[in-house]
Image (cartoon, rainbow, N blue to C red; front, side, top):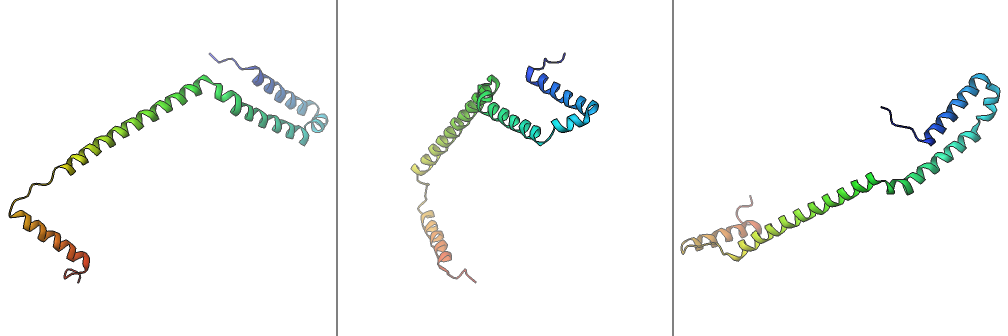
Length: 129
């Protein structure tokens, strides 16, 4: 089944059909009627209809409102999920900072030597060739 057309669509169809019939059966009259004034008036009406649709009709459309609400809910869910992940990562990071790494009596000297070697590389020590 075809959906019913609204009255503005029917009116537009009748105007176009009338202009075509005038062009076929009375070309001189159609040339006088369908000049730039008619085109500019039709363009002006089209612009007014578009502004009315965007400013008044579209925000009141229930489908648009439902999609807007769904996007808002999805954005809030994503934000909550990211905050939970960040809180979980922060807790793991705090736990890792709270526990010092285990060190042996012998391993502590090696760790200090390794730290000094890293400083020598940064200061331009013998490893810079």
